[in-house]
Picture 1 (cartoon, rainbow, N blue to C red):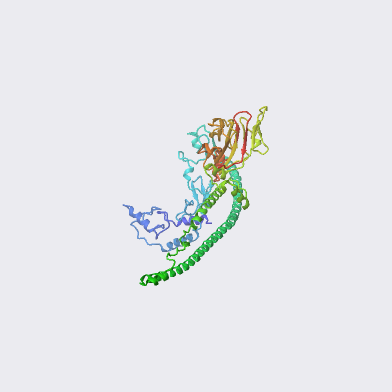
Picture 2: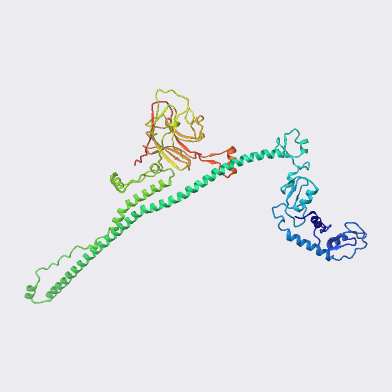
Length: 577
């Protein structure tokens, strides 16, 4: 670290006119040093009178002839070389606060004085601390923002009334009788708040870090399972492909064998026809010779007994049309359609995130089911509802804990009925108090799901889905604005036997189907299932970069609109064609 003497020595090597390092230093008769260009320009600016020294104002008479002080110039250059050698480590870089005292190149500031409103490097800070005991802070560049623009005083107070930083003079003017506290107190309060926020953020970081670790583990496991699944899929389909290849080769061999047999038969027939043709030519030649004869007796004695030519063999295998390709095309078409439909349903089931895996069947069971099906032909989905039923069916059971006291939930969680002659007691916790309703155990926050409920042509049922975040005491009325999407049996145009409920979480759709007539009853579109966090929770989420959008679960909702003897039953999905 440079001493105060070195700082003073550095200042002595500066021209007092340009305040920069000496350039071609010259000495005046009075002993002061200046840049040659600076002193020449200074004397040229004086119109009348003798030349004077800019420092001591001593009259020097006519402008003296100046020569460069070579010895002093060498001292200046030597000092500059030393400063350039030692200085680059501390020279202020772009974006750093420079020292306000240093000449070019400026050193990086070490502290900023709030009294002097200046920044000092380490060498200049040493001399500043010896002269004054002012308040120092870490270097800042925007000192003008810390000064009251009206009174030119430091901002030392905070007005809670106007939420402004003020100086002491402001309390006597615009902020008189306002509540003002010191910046230190505001700083402590704010730091306490930030510490609390930082603590919450730390907890969220831990949760998020644990979630990232868990998801990475699940992702790695999922990748292994996916590779395993792909291998098993290839392994399962490989025998089918090999079987088709074998049958193709066998069919080709059969066609080739048939072609060889046809060629052999054709060759035999050609040989026979050629013999008959030769015999026919011979006989024709004899007859022509007899025709030319004039001997009556010879003609009559040698005339052949059979004059009618023999009928050619009608068998001609090569004239038969080759219908093998047509037969194959006709037989393969239904097989191709069945395989394509089976694979399409399988792909849809795999795409659906909430679809249950289909039960495994042996080859014998599949053959039997195909044989026992009507006319032995597989029937593809004939409408949109059948595709929904095949690909999006989920298992739904009733949650007895959420049921109204007047309701009875069966042991398997599939049937719902109303108690008879039971008083209505207040309900607590998750139970419904103002609705004779119950929720399902299963909730869904993504994908698509479908289930069916038997309503037995009643009008007192209410079916649909609700958000998990609903206030069960303030649900009335049952409308989408309250997080409820339901269908009232009493408002339907006719009485239904069974209702199908289909939800597409990603598209925001809730649809109700008459499964017997296979028609759509009603559909809610553009539903808002997601929620946005607000308040401090949203602030904390934004601090840590988390999304404030929440995806609550949707729970199937079952309700009776009247206290009458009635039942509802969740039934397995049956894809009738």
